[in-house]
Length: 303
Image 1 (tube, rainbow, N blue to C red):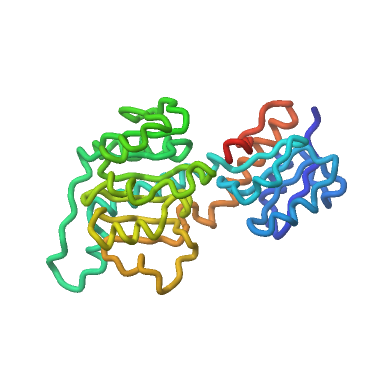
Image 2: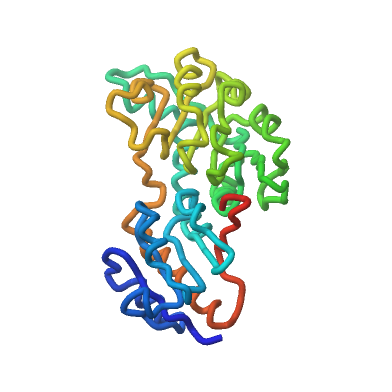
């Protein structure tokens, strides 16, 4: 199979994706009419992507790891791929930083106006539960290993995760939450995982446990989290994503001293394009060789 003719759009490529297409053995098409593959750079208005797809396009590369906004477009006529795993290292670093911030009670300490803030606790010997331990979870485990933590993992299939003492399947979530001092959400947003963390799940984490979310805000029922924080039923939360997002200025989550919120920057925009370019280059090369493409989307699973 020859390399694809790839249309890159819409928006400004700045040359990095085009260079990746060329390095992978493909050619950049001037528009979608003459293309047989598309690298889509726009995160909003998925209906515009539908309009750009001609009958000859055999592969669509999406820019995000979370592909829920495009799922209604995914069909069996062409191969659809996302950026699943491409940004895992960056997101795992941010997750590790948030776990450390939680253990040292940095949200409280940073808000203190005088000495005497509640001290944190050692991370060594703590249990970290990774919920949805795919590429991010596999990247996070070795980052936390030097701190002497015990790692539990939970995945849809229960497949073993390197670095985890134990991996639970879909029916093992409650056990992982109950045993964890810090729960890191790294799951995709699907029909099954939307609202995954509600009042009962937060109660399992308990008044000394912390929730860390670097995945999707809608995994958490925000009103339930606010109630659990207000009533002291959970120790705290470190959130890179929220529901709604952006979080309104007057939202109650901003007011809790034991909540740290970062503005969806676990995958820094300054590095995102380079990481996407690496995925595009890999997939163009695979396409040319007739191999399975990385990040192939399964619409039934939702990722």
